[in-house]
Image (tube, rainbow, N blue to C red; front, side, top):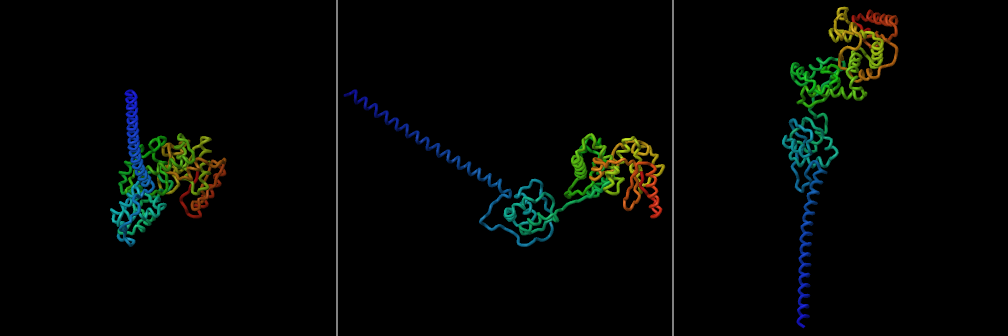
Length: 381
């Protein structure tokens, strides 16, 4: 009996111990379940916050309270600068600090109501008015007429000195300062194949800049545009200087777009037979006198740019050509002409010839036009 009791007693104690262990395990599971749930709630809240901020670049959501906003179109004039990379909140804060809007929230609400338009706001300087209703402030930022910009139009066919003076006028730097800046061609991004010579690499066009633009920015933009045009026509690096040289002569010689590829063809035809180009435009590069006529004395100048004395291409471009002349240099007209002459300096009519005798007859037409109009200038090669 004693042994049986003792055995029964031992069994009961083991069961109690197992129950206690099961209770502890259940308590541990409940504890970890609570911890994991809490962590999940926190992570979910953080994820929601990040997603919300990502979706709305203009920050703040709607508020139950009425935000401060002006009623009218504003008064006075103030300059506002929208920086590259500014978020919607940054723009709203800039407008508020400038006194344009009554509160950042008013502009944020307006921007959130017009998300597609808000996305199109571009960096730059703007003329705004103070105390504008947020709606009108948004309209003002979307209107290009309110941008404070500097524009410079660079015409085709001029030389570097002309452009440097134009940049000096635009930026209010002295010509000496701009010239000094232009000498650091590496800093301007001038390609190595130019060998430090800006001539031909300043693309003529109309450029728009912010009011604080520096001369180096203007020069770099013009060089970069020349590179883009050369890339457009797949000009190999090793050919770019020659292409610009031919294009620069075409730019100076052609009066009409239709003549650009024709004149380019004449240049290549002369190069192929090792005939001097004999272009007055290259002599004018050495001695830039008025008109297009050169004198016997001009044509005796000893320089490789003088294509009357030296065959082949001059050492580099003689002007800064536009796209039409670059395209003509890349894709010249195919013909057998080796002479051309502009027979009417008013209309730009140009005639071509394969032989010198034919050319002389064309020159006679030019002389007749000169006699008829009492013109003392002509264009003939």
